[in-house]
Amino acid sequence: MNERLVIGKKLILNPVSVNNYTLFPLLSFFSFFFFVLPSIQISYARSIENTIAKYLLFFLGRVDVDHVITRKMQLIAEAEQLKPAFMKEVDSHFTEFVDSLIEKSVILESSTPASTFSSASSEKDMHKNRSLRAPPEHGKIFTARRSLLDELFELSHIRTIYHMFIALLIIFILSTVVVDFIDEGRLVLDFDLLVFAFGKSTVVAYTWPCMFLGTFIIPYGLFHQWAQGYSNSSHRTIRSFFYGTLFMLFQVIGLGIGPVYVAVAYALPPASGFIVMLEQVRLIMKGHSFIRENVPRVLSSAKEKSSEFGFCIVPFPSMGQLCSKMFYRCVNSFYGLICFLFQVLGSLFYSYYIFVRLCIPQFRNISQEPFNLRALVLCIFNSILPGILIYFLIFFAFLHCWLNAFAEMLRFADRMFYQDWWNSTSYANYYRTWNVVVHDWLYYYAYRDILWLFGKKFKAAAMLSVFAISAAVHEYVLAVCFGYFYPVLFCLFMCFGMVFNFVLNDRRKGPFWNVIMWTSLFLGQGVIICLYSQEWYAHQYCSIKNPTFLDYMKPRSWTCRHVQI
Image 1: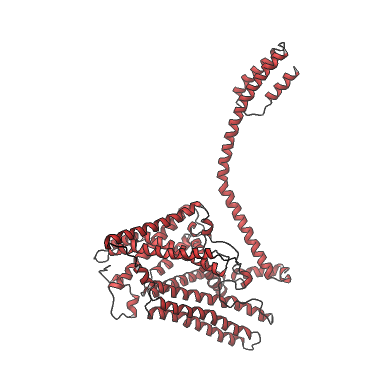
Image 2: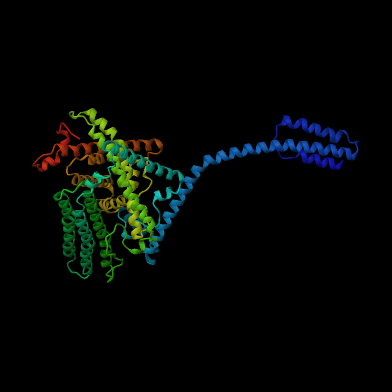
């Protein structure tokens, strides 16, 4: 009897969640056998008890398993819903922690023990001054990191998109080969467009070394001569003015007028002109950043009356920190270098086939009718596809492959040349993440210096000035390379770019604003390809024998009524 009571308690107290209407008859049937029939023999009763116990345990266990499975599925669904928010929160906190840790380590390395234990008021003053113009040692922080596309290409889904672009290139090649074989009866492999675009390469081969060696020697030599006798000079202002004037003359005449004269006098084709002009802009930026980074160090060491400079000088102008300890080196990979250069070459051929298959046939089919609004609208929308493909190729070939190739050669480990600009929901974030190298230069040497000169109240004016500088330089390069002034990019940059920068600001979140940004980018690329192509062909087929300066400034596509392609 006691054994039956123990078994009954175990079954009744079994912690499972079942329906009361199911549990009541089972317990009644169970009680009848264990408490109403006590006179049955022990052996027979035990056999019946074991059978009923097995049945009840099986039934109740099945209900318990079904309940556990259902509950488990609910918990998995809830976990999947919470997973994105949790990962985003962890990532943000981890990023803030790492950034603060790096900043503190840099400040501790660059500060003395006396400055570390300074008073609260001095810390507030230092923080206030840093917000306007940070000292050189508190500038951009370099760290070893890979480019974002290199990390994304480890995912099979992103590699598939990369393979889709390769497949599209194969389709372009097959289309060109088949059409040429049908028209000519043979394979045509002359690549006449590439040969024309990169023509007069010998002029470029002579011009670039002169620009490079001039930037390598002259800014460093002038700076070294100025810095050697500055602390002991009795006429520091005159000395600084003299060497500063020499440096400005080199920047304006040597790097400014010289390359422009070569591009105009030798009538360099577009691609060759871009090589010279983009190198001109790059070397001017490098020379300015070299002087801007090191002059404050000399001034601070002179105030401390130190006989030695409190910094290291590398005999090569470079953007950002020049001290070797700030450059995180990595082991260069010859295979990686070859892969990056091969992808640059592939992107050039990709651009060639885009122009041959999508751009030139479109303009050849333009009817011999006067220019009208309908033709302009159709031209813009038909130019969106080649425009956005060229846009992707410029990003991939230059910002990813070309810069990573030089980073491999120079063993430079900080590969953050861009960020995830494609996820931007605001133009403010897009401008920060599209080209990190140029953005950092404009931020440290243009925007912050303007705030330092005019005060923190002029943030809007400083931002407008930076936009104007960037837009003017872009349009200047295009005007010299194309041989005409047609400020389409400047107007898009200063008008729509400025408006979108304030309208589509960082407060705009969500996929809707990302769609708006991509739509505007698509339309912008279509406008650029259409209008610049029309102006190019107008200059080719409506040429003027003795053009004046105003003829180069006026849009010729507006007056050339019949553009023959």
